[in-house]
Length: 119
Image (cartoon, rainbow, N blue to C red):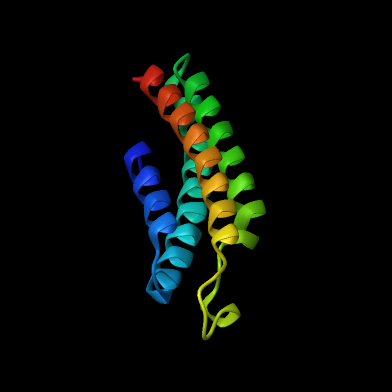
């Protein structure tokens, strides 16, 4: 996703004016968890093939695994449409999701740094 994507996502959460954001927000969040879990599995699987740079791949995998844990724990702050059929989720809920996304962003940046070391 990259840092800019996290920033834009959070900006959109802060400025959401109606319920139309709920569905894409949930699915983007779920897809992010799935993608980072897949990345961690892949990197751990191929790391032995890369010799010394493989250590950086394992480190990147560890950051992605931490990101998955944080995102999974924070899922309770991602509103589902069924929970708010006729109203906007509270701003506080969106702010909590933003906090989770900012933690994920930091871990993502660290993972990318480790991937760059492996190149």
